Image: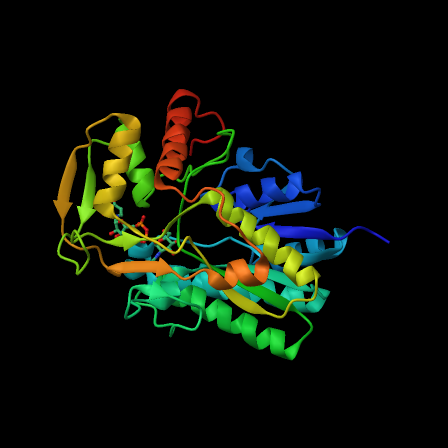
Length: 334
Ligand code: UD1
């Protein structure tokens, strides 16, 4: 019998490339499908790379059959919250409609397992600032809505067919792989840790704090920052869970505690030894004040354990990656 393979959409992107690398290290057969709109072929360290779109149904059908794919991991998406507010249809097209196209091919080709990159943004503004999987999903930006609609399609398709899925709701990812081979390389990045590290290495003149009047301890936004290695590992746990016959389900992926924007910037200054130029700006559209994960379900049901749960470790890793990009950007320039 032919060995089953895993199709990873968006495997050349930031999170996808870390998962592809970990899957390769675990001996899995992986095919990355990526249109390189934000990803880099150089970031794909394992398996086969195919240039193309998730909504190219004939290409997807061919890959699923040729490689005897039984698991799809779906990362390909737009992920910038403020952009989703200004251009919502871009997000519904790429995140929601493309997921539907992909799922149709999965159903036709009899894919058994589907692991979906969802987001903490599906929760909107949880009353306590802490989200558990049963917290009502009330997204406050089109990015979160576009992902939640995909979760609903998965829920309904898994009821109507043999496909089983895990949706992982990511909190705020940062950091790079332990050997600084891959990391977040997106041009015009918007994520706080990356922006602050780019400022520390001199790529940007300053970093902004968006809002200092939130009802949080220091007035700035609080998030649950998770190291990309731990986030990637959750995908391998989800794969093992589905292969063991686990039911379709949704899991938060974070550490269960948060840091404010000011605390993150302070840590970047400590790690880099650079005094950042910081500008105070108004609140950014679509931002909740505080968003922290309850991750008990991930640990208890998938056996996931955090290995890098420390802000200094996360920021140091992200800073190392920015230094590497500065010195040796080969393969990571757009
Ligand atoms: C959001 C999503 C997250 C998604 C990510 C991808 C939510 C709640 N979360 O994260 O699921 O994976 O986008 O883009 O929608 N900040 C600054 N200055 C900056 C950048 C950010 O002050 O230059 C602040 C933000 O206002 C926020 C915090 O830092 O309070 C984190 O922002 P960011 O890193 O952009 O991530 P989220 O928007 O939380």
